[in-house]
Amino acid sequence: MAKTITARALHTPDGVIDYPQIRIGEDGIVLSVEAGEANTDETVLTSSFLDVHIHGAVSHDVMETSASGFCEMERFLATRGVGHYLPTTVTAPIDEILRSMERIAEHIESADERGGEGRATPIGIHLEGPFLSHTKRGVHNAPDLLKPDIGLFDRFQDAARGHIRLMTVAPEVPGALELIAHATSRGVRLSMGHTNATAAEAHAGIAAGASSATHTFNAMRAMDHREPGVVSVVLTDEETFAELICDGIHVAPEMVKLFARCKSADKVILVTDGMSAAGMPDGTFRLGNFDVQVKDGHATARGVLAGSVITLDRAVANFAKFTGRSVATVARAASHNPAKMLGLEERFAVGVGRPANFNRFAPDGLLVETMLCGKSVTAREVVGRV
Image 1 (tube, rainbow, N blue to C red):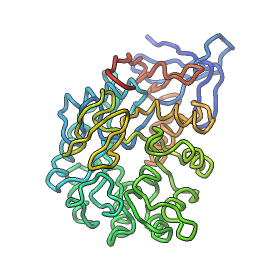
Image 2: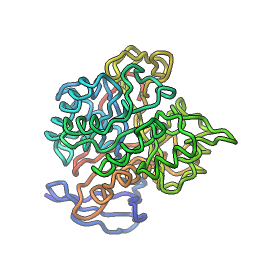
Image 3: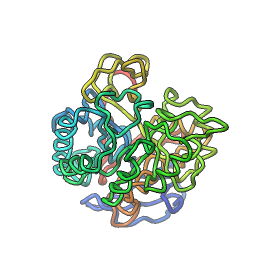
Image 4: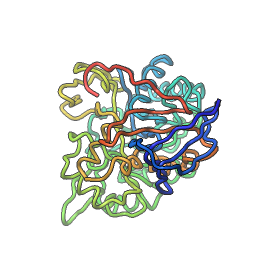
């Protein structure tokens, strides 16, 4: 039987529909969207989130976990507003990356494309490493970093059965521009990250095909008034998308405000860079093939930050708080913008004939419900932080 849901407003990429009445069929597909009469419902609906940079959650790491572990992680992500995501790798020995590509690809191909069983759906792989800068490697293991290699990338993509959708590369490393152009020609989006690139080298990366930046500010050459570096290019280039980890730890609130003033709202992409400790209490967890210590919201290994424990609903709330923008507006940065960066905006459009994947927010900006394919996801009790 079809059902109807309502709200104070529905925010779509094309605008706002006041007092929407959304009819949803038994198959979870939107049948109609119409503006209705004013009512007492003060909640706001947006698209569900798409996290394009996440390594794991609730004790599960995407490079090592089993099929059941993926499912548990995806149920957790759904309760935090995430409808779709890109499992993200870290630098590791070649054989480990190849095995991870195969395992993740198998899970992607077995996943329910329409959010079955209240789970977030993996839609591709984000390959972060091994083609990164030694100088700005962050937590990535130095011995496993490699020079950009087209043949090796093709091996990774073959192992992934074509599911690599996004790859982080340092554009200044010899061979990077050729790899960027090659991967782009195979339909992969390229993101500049873990990079010590000068402004000129960043511009060259964009000219070769790079279209985004990985966790802006973090693991990047710092801005200088004589050599502005990659960050200045990312902030001022009108066509480049830019990820941001908005947990108040990776980037200070003042810098978040500066980022928002520089970067067009339709190019901002909020990510978690979440690792297996997300949704768990303090302790020791895995990121790829090494241990990470988590205490008071800080995830560290080898003396540097190693991913985050924030969830995407909190990142949206933080960005709204730090910048003064509405949660409904900021939600685009966690839904429509990443989909557009991947070239999937039509697939994730809101409207008739599309899956009913919505997030419902209270007037105070609190996420109160996620709906995947027309079914409400029940929030799970989480030990520790949320």
